[in-house]
Length: 166
Image (tube, rainbow, N blue to C red; front, side):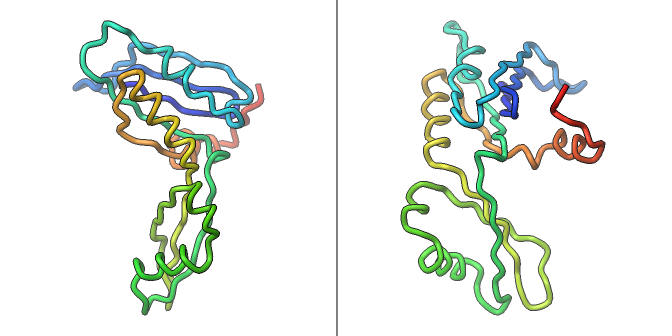
């Protein structure tokens, strides 16, 4: 499996295999790119581990920097159906061009007394399509695309107040 994490200063790449004793890391690389969140040049990290004689398809797990994601929340009246409320929200609140450009994901948060809060995560369709195209080009099967704020690394970094600056 190839796991790539996009950070403020580049891409951390791990080629690894699961074993009974835990993950075995076969290759590791940091591809430095201080503008990676602006240019989103995913080809360099994905292609750097590609081997033409590779038999079968490897899996790819990609973690995007939160700078490439839009976050929002909506509050819904708990007496309404969540799915119907989402349809109404997208039709009446969101801009048509936004919906054409972004894919939205809704996650329930802890309910309040008479309302249900949803976390709304939007990812650019261009970014997602770029990852899908490059994965296909280099014979990888995407198993997931995630956001860095949901990783254990980011939680530990914030908890222990670790800076990116060295």
